[in-house]
Length: 126
Image 1 (cartoon, rainbow, N blue to C red):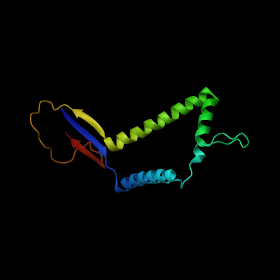
Image 2: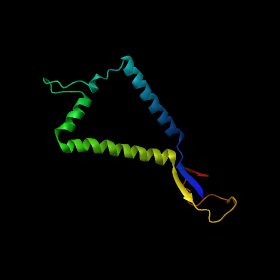
Image 3: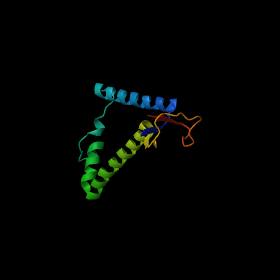
């Protein structure tokens, strides 16, 4: 049995964006922990006079309004997680295909590029 893994190549610009996003997230967390960036707008309790609350409190109140809202609060994050994991598997892990060798006892390299390989991908044969 032979395993072939095909994955998309990420451009240098994509890697720069990934590292910039990670750096921005770390910077935001550090600045919020030090107190330079206020994040109390997320967890402010409900104010009866103005009718306002923090984002997380408003999110929870939306979910308690009806069972449809609660279902929306369960399904949408689940779908977002599924899309995120699909992107991770598609772009970083790649698609693995196991191929039967059909009685070949030794490795015979082929000349030229594979006809099924798409441009912008790498193919690893294990």
